[in-house]
Amino acid sequence: MFFHDPTLTKSINIFQILDYLGTFVFAISGALAAMNKRFDPFGVVILALVTAVGGGTLRDVMIGRTPVGWMQDINYVLIVFAGALVAMTFRNYLRYFRKTMFLFDAMGLGLFTIIGVELGLLGGLHPIICILLGTLSAAFGGVIRDVLCNQVPLIFEKEIYASLSILGGIIFLFLTKTQLTPDTMYIITSLLVIVLRVLAVRYEWVLPKWYVGK
Image (cartoon, rainbow, N blue to C red; front, side, top):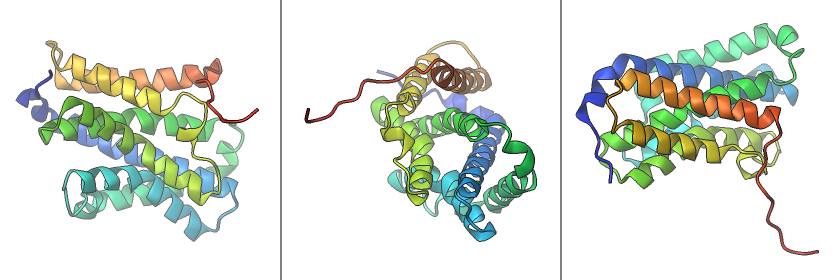
């Protein structure tokens, strides 16, 4: 069984940076999805917001961290607006890259996985719960985004997505038992999830589908 090492809390700077960066890239992901559906500017900002803070909101409510994080720090709202503005401003350039939204989504998946797992550890939760918390934190914003865009959420498709978040959480827990610094653990785990997600799409790695019927 894993026990949280108190030294992890010493790396609050990199932890905060990862949280802000995850919020920013998920905001861009949501804004791009909204523009692909031809939402108006208000819709673009709203979808950017729910994509960026949806997973974190669920995470905070589940662990009793209220008011939820983004409501206690105005920087999160400003970061969401900045992400939406970047997406709208450079939309004519971003549209030439078919996988732009996917890349930002992959970055958010890797970053928010670590945030969720770490907060679970700080709350003294069981390691398995921490992994699930990291997965929800990373994937739920994308679920809301896809539902509002009238699409089947990516987490429920055959693509390797949420399973990478689970893998990242497991690896992070193992790394806490090593002599690596907290900053190194954060970077290694988040990059691993991001790279594996990119490779999964690049080489079309998929999970088998289960269905009932002929």
